[in-house]
Length: 78
Image (cartoon, rainbow, N blue to C red; front, side, top):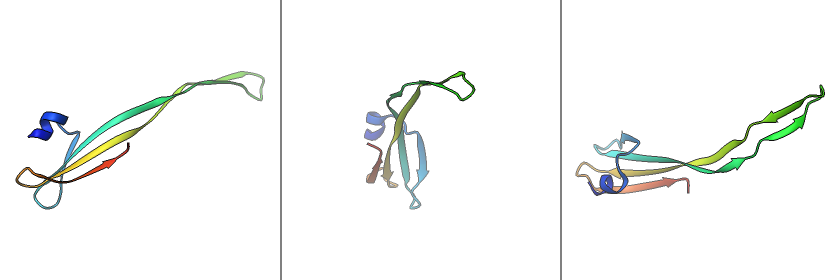
């Protein structure tokens, strides 16, 4: 219950294979933007690439037993 109060509902819930659940929280973290680029093509024209976002996905997994007690957790991404 405290996990739900602090983190809200998880993005995904799956079984832990032992009668409990794995609560999975994921968040996309945007780290910045690569600028667009203008360049000449071989035919003499001008081409442009669009700016692109870059980042990563932050994942937190909480393993909860049948009694609702967190017995393990994992973190992926910073």
